[in-house]
Length: 425
Image 1 (cartoon, rainbow, N blue to C red):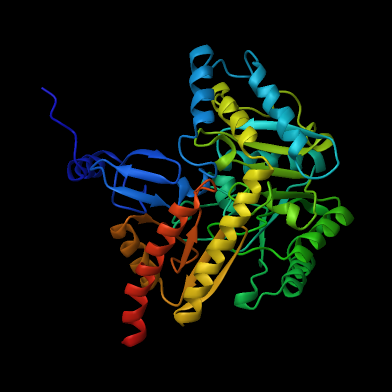
Image 2 (image 1 turned 180 degrees about the vertical axis):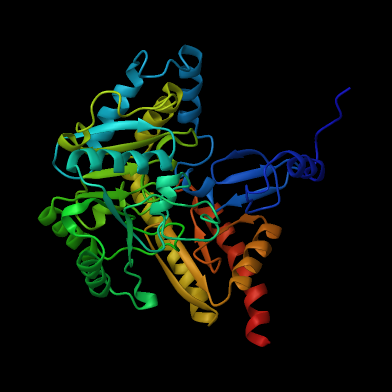
């Protein structure tokens, strides 16, 4: 006889007994259902969601258009593997992504499953195109958990642990982080020093960069930095890769964050909000570069799954000009609220971001953790970044004004509870 399996406490016991310890959890809770910008746990407690599956739910949970597209496609065709027998949704999605990708160059697309797959395949394509081995990434970056992606990631804990040796020919340069003293000019000088002392630019296949650091603490790269990377790449025959896994699909107020700088990358990797919660990623790039690998060099059993493609096609219909305008409004509200808190509490040492990709850095990780805990107890889900001292916000961009105001009120109350004790101690 099978015992009842309801209740968070029992589920936690089952999780501890059966799930690998290395899988971390931001919140000690189990979600039962979600819609829009709200989730409900298995005990029917309701929360505003300022995490969005780590930036996956830009269009909101269970958007009706996405749910309908998934249901219709699942009833028609769920899998053949595109390398075995092709299907139209893959081609239609590639066409759509090629149309919306930044820059005038003709584009082609490779569909995959995860962000890590996308970053690794972008490097494979760049290496085949340039016939060079080396890759330059940046400090504080995050490009995924698989071996090459983890090698490119410029953040040690908790991701790297004792998982090495890591891939060779990966070099890291400082990311421009003015709050930490790294101006764009200083970071560019460090990159030139790297070329002079560690790897000659004629050996570099690719430079990979996040237009806004994600896990590294929501630090936007200055436009002049990205523009100079474009010039360096052009001058030295290097493929410039933008990792837009977390920044893409409206999060920064434009469809892609690189549009703020006017820079067209050679290759761009996307995932997360591409398919509204279905596992799907892509490498979109200049057609000449994308066509460098021979047939058979790219692919994956689940890559570009037809159900995920159907979800992504629905997402692209949702993300119109009105959607992007709403993202900018949400971003303005977030900045206004967080900067108001910063003016009151010296322990909030920085507020930064781009569009609705907004974060608040605290003077002590314990303060950040305390705010996250207080917010959860009040019905708001938050998540940390950086060194555990940054609270990042990835609220669904479809949130309405009433819910946004209510969630920000909880955020404010949580900060007041934690920080007033700190300031008075």
